[in-house]
Length: 330
Image (tube, rainbow, N blue to C red; front, side):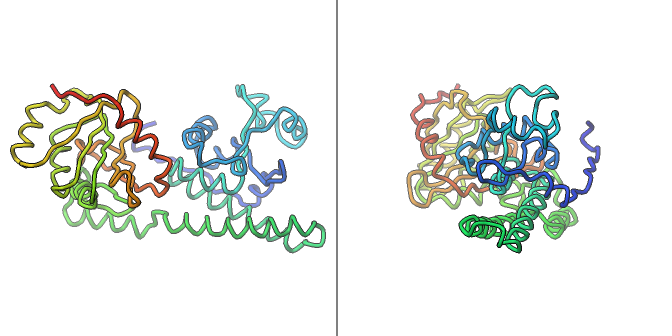
């Protein structure tokens, strides 16, 4: 598909969504293939995103159907949907309303966000219906459904608050009107910046240390780090790849230009695919940023940096990476 080709998705019918909500193990869920269709991704891609973030998907959010569960529901689900046809070699996964919400943080595409809101609203409306027919249900189940509905409404509100709206896009357009070219724009937590300013803004926040995980380094990487406070310790975890990696002479020039500064270089040993910036690792105020592009390429294309709220799951990974051998610049 060409980069400029416009993909148009059919509007989502909420009533149809309600009819695709099933119940297994006492939890209302939706099949992976159904969610993937609404999200505009392949079923395999959806489940791979879940597995990459497996700690965010406890069994109440997502689980794989057993053969027995699959056989019980065959009469109500088409053969292709449940995976007997269509090339699938594994039983389908199902996601609760909380699992659908968590998928948006794993996929974070506009289509996924839009679809997840409608899907979760369908879950909520079903809960409303059940409440109205409370006399038909045991009181314990009613209480559980009420609690789940309240949690779901909070999740929908959080997603809506973090969505990029037309108003947000208009702010980006104002940057173009102000003479900033598209090659200079970087989006930091939803706010547009000139690319270099965004990295500098992050590094200035560090009080104790900075750990940067990025396999591609350059002189611009050092330029951005020079804006950190002088007493902040800096560690770069990288395999220093690319056709023009950072050279020892370039690092020595950095030390001459910024006396009193130093950087510890550690090999990543091909353990890191994405790029991260970690501020104040090992402290209560630790912050983690996920970067869409290497800082050495800042300004070449529009990209995004997003702060990660659940930092605890990264602590062990960072500690293991920092134990790798030193990286030697040539």
